[in-house]
Length: 275
Image (cartoon, rainbow, N blue to C red):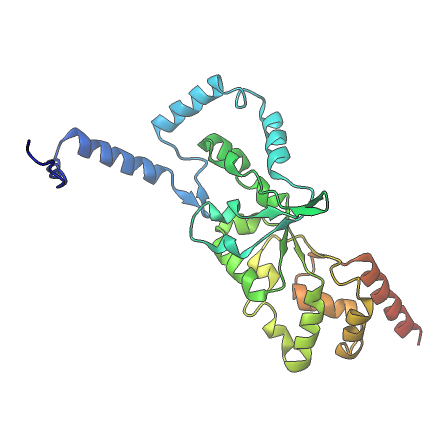
């Protein structure tokens, strides 16, 4: 019995010009060109005949796509929008295209004394092109994203997002310790405003930003951040300095402070004005 040949089979010859395989490859290449990227997102206007036919079939056979557009949007919002802020971790920075959305997670939920983190259900964006077109920006525009206390991390996150995704981010949340971090930096740097977020302001990272919220992570230690505020803000009002630190010249962005912190700053401001 002859021994089994472990060598791989020879590769087939390359197809010559005019073969069906080559024409099929050129057809796929042409379709890729029609599905061009606009601001980093799939084109919603241009499509090939094959994609248009698939859209018609889906609208007839899919129970979801047979629903009115208004109801579909409500379903997409129910799946993609979370009541809690979305915690953005460093794993988002992986080069995989899906990592730009798949690794974002909502804040942990305490269940039986344990913290459970639930991954956002973003696989719906991969079902078909029509669903992607209708729901691609819902996740970014209607959620609040929580960033850790790391300026460079936020810059890297913004660089990892597509242009259309960055423009769709309207609400972000920062750890309240960012104030003490910025105040301490102000002591060391003469022109401290140029050092905020290293090279860019929040309004540059997210051009359509509407609100910046600070969580209440350090409110359990009020004397700590009050001690930082007093010597670090020689010019009043402190609230205006805080806006300048976080938002720069973006006057149309709403700054939401924790209630205890906002009440303290407003009370101290009124005492200074009365004197």
